[in-house]
Length: 124
Image (cartoon, rainbow, N blue to C red; front, side):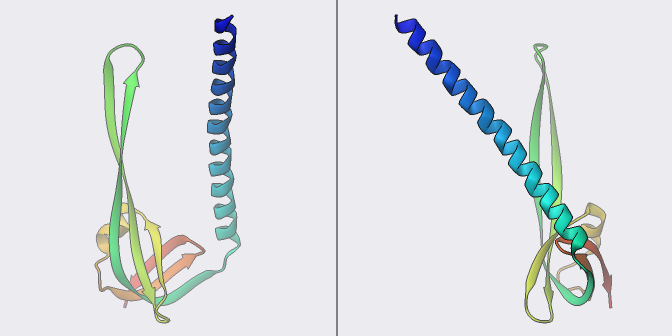
């Protein structure tokens, strides 16, 4: 008598969590495609700008190898630079690691970008 209700509740909760996770993947994929499309339809601009800040975001990932008791840990680093344009507006753009290392706070030059996509920075 009591087992049937608990099993049904488990099936409902499992299904709910499963569809919630799938729904989150779909939402993230749609947002990524929407941003990619918006960037592709934005004009390529080159404007005078100053590097005002730099930051990194380090993510740690732990991978277990099915039942062997072995695990593997990896990290990935994302690099961001904040630029200030002549109007005083600021924008933070994701940049490649080699670009991040070449930029110094206070650098002035011409920033090239397309929407939220960093294209390059040429010092003056």
